[in-house]
Image 1 (cartoon, helix red, strand yellow):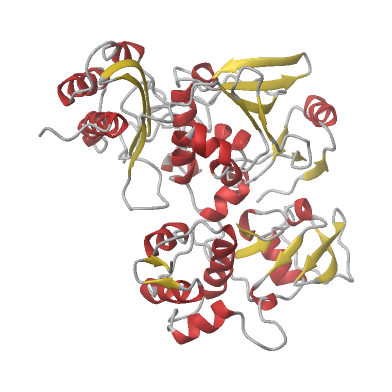
Image 2 (cartoon, one colour):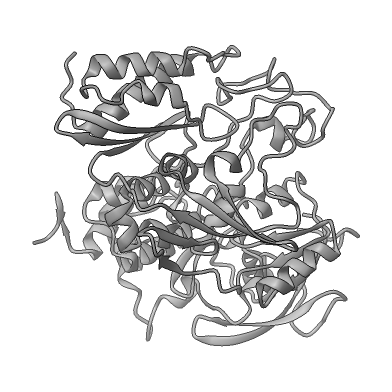
Length: 178
Length: 331
């Protein structure tokens, strides 16, 4: 994203451009201070300022879900979020899901079920699935399909993505195990 | 996206002062529509006033038995609220049929009311659009207009309002509470959005310096007989071609009250009082619903690509009423 003068807002935290503000985000359990322009999206801040490039820029318009991260535990589109508005918030990205060197169960399930081909949508798919599980609204594979519809996979790995999520949710073929 | 300055408001009065002081300043809450429009250069506000920290984020009981939905409660928290689900299931259904889980987690109730049309030409700054640039002309009337209005359109604009939530709110006859420098006022939902006429650039009757503070639901929630039917090009995450919120009160199989609102067909959620009145005091049968469907589209006009919507709307009305009444198909 460019400023009116055409310079890229991709500063490291040490250099501060005029018009930027310092904000603090708790990213993957670590407080991070960064300088952002008002128009810096959370997506650009994560990728360009913090160097966490696991979160992907797809459409940049909230249509594809590749930029999905968890803010205060809820899945959102980071491309339609201004970083400055989230000052003080807790952000979890794909880089923050593994614990003590062990993959998050959803990460492992995506590997086991081959829930991707090119992998570009995968960080967003997995963060979205983490959000879906904590929302606790999905009971059936159809619910998973409906509640994951904000994440597009152009390789078409949907069947395996749903299977991976189903596995982690301990869902039987027709729905949640009794 | 244009460069802009940013203020975070701490209370309602400071938020109002910020937009009164600067006529070009714009409120931002969920941002799901505004930031998208800014990225497309459709909106270029020089100043944003962040209202997300204002205390308008609660759902509260109203003394007469209704429910007050704070303007800053997210669409997801509203749809999944236990009282909304129990007393106003038509609203939950409508909200959950719109957008994606991520967007519903971000989008607020006030912002849902204020979202702009998804007309392709409104979004495409290379083409004339009376809504974006008054007087420039309408590219949709003689252009590709598959998603456009069949009711209430003008020769200046055939855009439709994209919300699902608002269709249910229209059927429920919600009241929008707003506050401005002259104090508070309430706007009946039917008067909140407007038809395009010769000023299609104006979507609502909200004044420029006013802030939506809540949406108040009346006591009557039609939880026993309701349907929200959304017809779209794919099964999920698409705007409605036609949607219908149908709510009935029944005494046995006799209809005592009817509410019908249509989405995807007009510049605002579409109500037709005469068509609704046709059902009062008569039996909930498909023949009667057919007559209502025909009455609603009697004044409809297609523009070519969207002409199919007239028959689609007629049938959607009948089906939604059947679902609401739990009437078995007779044909």
